[in-house]
Picture 1 (cartoon, one colour):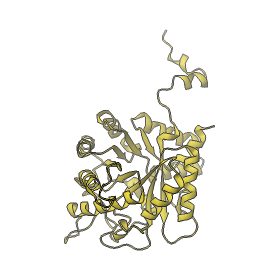
Picture 2 (cartoon, rainbow, N blue to C red; picture 1 turned 30 degrees about the horizontal axis):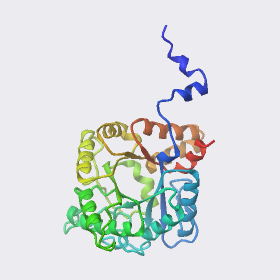
Picture 3 (spheres, one colour; picture 1 turned 120 degrees about the vertical axis):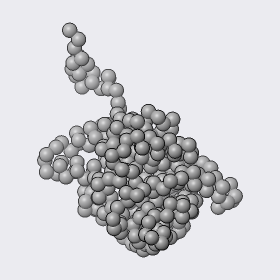
Picture 4 (cartoon, rainbow, N blue to C red; picture 1 turned 90 degrees about the vertical axis):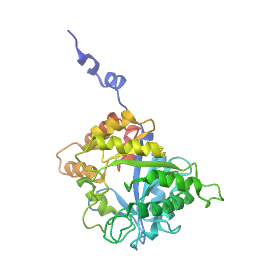
Length: 327
C-alpha cells in the first residue's frame, strides 16, 4: 500500500520534506508615516498597525532590519492635499522626508521602497489628476508620476512601487528616471520599478483607506481591474514586463491566488503579492474573538501566498513573522 502519511509522521520529517518555506528576506513591511504627529497612533481598523511620526518611523525601520526582513514599503499621509497632489513630488513632502529617514535608519540592511501614487496626496482621493469631466486623465497623470519618481529616487528609494494602474506608467517612469538630469545629468538608471501589474478594484482595501485618510468619493473601477477577470491579469503583467518592470505584483493576494499563480508562471522577473489591509483586519478580528488561532492563521495565509508563486510578500505582519521564523 502507498502511504503518503509516512512523510507526515513527525515535525522534523514534515519540515524536511516541506515544498514551500518562508524566510524573513521574503517579506516586506508596509509603513505609514503621517505628517503633524509627534507620537505613533494606532489605526483603528488595523489593530497593531500605526501611523508613524518621523521619529517612530526610524525606529520601526531599525526593528525591521534587526528582524532580517527584506524591505519596507513607505506610504505618506500629508496634512494638506490639492487637486494635483503637489505634496507627492515636493522634496520636503512627508513621503520624501520619510524615504530619507528610512534610508538612514536602514543603513543598507534592507530595501527601502516607496509607494508611487497620487491618491494619498490629492484632495479628491483618485490616483491621478482629473480632466474637465471629473475622470482620471491617464496621460496627464503619467507626467505627475515621472516627477514623483524623480523626487523619490533623489530621496534615496531603491524601489518605486507603481500602484496607480495608469496605462503606460512603467514605460513613462522608466524613461523619466533614465533621462532625468536631476542627478548631475546621470539620471537614475539603478532605481528599480515594482509594478503593481494586476491590481484589482477590491473591497479588501477598506482599512487601508482609513490608514491613508483617503478622501475618495466613489470608486476606482475605471482604472483598477475587474475582480471577474483572470486572463487580463496576465495581459497587464505582460505589458509591464515589456515596458521594463523589474518586479511585478498581484494585489490583493488571498482572493487572487489563481492570478498570482498565472503571473508567477509567465514572469521572468521576481513576483510580489500584497496581503492587503482587509486580509489583515479579518484575521486580527477573528483571532481577537477567539474564533481562530492567530499565529497559525497568519503563517498559513502567508505560506499560501508563497506557495501560489510569490517570491516577495508584502504583509503588515512582516516583522512579527520574522521573529517567529527565528525561534
